[in-house]
Image 1: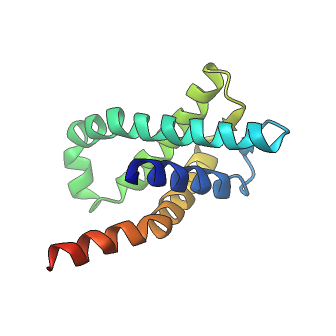
Image 2 (image 1 turned 60 degrees about the vertical axis):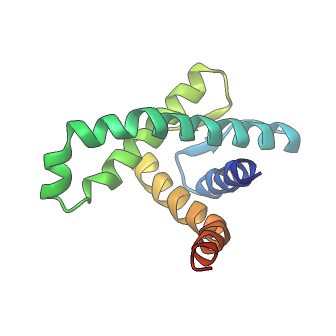
Image 3 (image 1 turned 135 degrees about the vertical axis):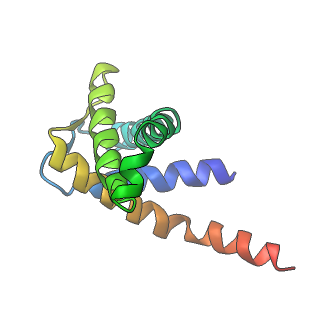
Length: 129
């Protein structure tokens, strides 16, 4: 059930990112939009699961030198890549450039964190007992 909640939170976060110019949800009906958002949320999670550890290992010196700020750039590139993969999979979602991906990834991270905060707090309180 926690997985479903996280996917839905990510889908809402991706939807929030569509307020930015350059991040577009290219479908009309509400049901199609919801399906696309869930698909993009799953895709973004998969891209992060596979590529983010590789980027961290390959660029660990850069992560140290920038005190982790390069992580923002990496997240932006991964979000931009997710938009490209979504297009290849015929999902009606696009991220038109690096800056759109960069800002979109920040919005997705913040909104996802806020929406999944109850899960984090529940885990913290259950550990203290």
